[in-house]
Length: 628
Image (cartoon, rainbow, N blue to C red; front, side, top):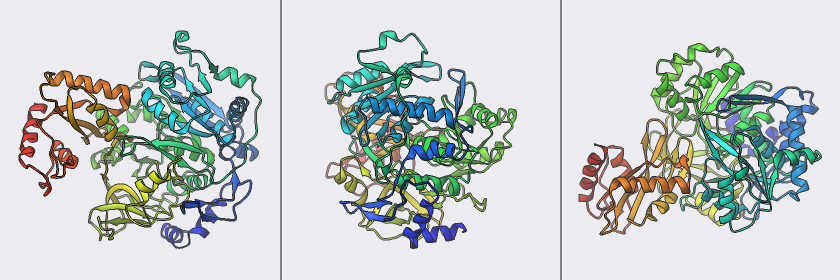
């Protein structure tokens, strides 16, 4: 079946198409209801089917005779340590950890928060939860206590699984003080706090009462079997930045997700079982869930856990060293990583040191990849660099290329074509479909295909308001886009105030709340400006309170520190510019898009709703002074 036939069938005969795809994974009870509705009249896939995600990722392959295949490779240049796990070895630890969780009283339907770095035990914790039907929420290890508190208070976990420390290049970041602070601030008590001691330093003074040692728990626990769950049973929650500043708990099902991931690995990534696949993502992001853990393991690929940075551990050849050493067939990373490597090794000298003969395809996503970076990659690496686009909400690609038969054509700067299952349109503000080459809003006709979000955890109203209310019968992506006459789509950027920093979606509203809490700040606007390395970075413009005597230098230092403490270093806010006043509409709404355009020094039209055009000149003059 060629690409066009696949796509057409997925749109015109959804139930038949996805029933066929569901047959590619193993169910305990194959579904008889393929497409149905929940109590809110929202889509459910395979609702009466039963399966288990950990079984698909681990046990099935052992039963099929592949128990001694390497399932997981851990490569940590920051600790100079490497480790491999077969499917048999992985099952032993995962099943015992699952038994340990069960012995602590965790059962199907409970939640657990996982706050850990890029180590094998994080993957084991995710799969141990899935094994017994516990819903996991992985929190990026770089987040500050406040972010951990928000998630604890929302999902009310029965357990928090953490580690003693993470590593940023050469700096050890203790996790336990952050966890202890979060536990103090959280509304509800977390009954079980399990800690994996990495033994990087003597951290005995960081331990606090009630901690459960990860390794001791495994040693004394008996392995448990996989618990069958319904297809619609939530596998995990993953919190993504919301426009109100409060993160949204994206809820993912099990059966639809497993079906979509199996489809992705075969058709989109074109990777065969037994090959090595590497998604260089943190476990705390959607890519880490879908394509560092579940997708590759479902497809019986060897997956790589990488703890380090692309240019610092030890040099900008690290990615090519890993691809060569482990015979990686396909890789997935953010364009930020390639741009950083290009900056450090512009002539590709480090690439020449490694044998990349097994390397077939490079996939990029997280933010749009610029043409210059694509050209550098093609010149020095010599394999296709394929940009594609999706969201935490979708869980797998929405735009991309079907590479399974190598009959695909890349258009530079495009995120590809709609993936089977996604009936994508480009609408204007009134909900009318636009002709090619006109920029509009990217929307998707309902129902969304399997694997897309079940909703927002315990908040259907917010889910409906955020995604389903803008255009009746359509999912609103929040992104602007242009489609050409060949069906290729070009993403133009976010249309709300969530910005994309090196593939990490962060809320400018949340940052504004922090900036405005400074005692000298009267009002502020935080926008995402273009950055050649990270795609976007936040930039704060502030108006000081009358009578304030603080220097701009001290104000900037204060605010950068505040944002780092509340959100974490990942927020990357380093620029704070004081202005006399912010541009607003006559109704008082801050014109953030105008501020962003002025900071990016792009052409603009004066908004017809602005209350005073003179503010534009004021800000332009201030930008010159600030950057001088």
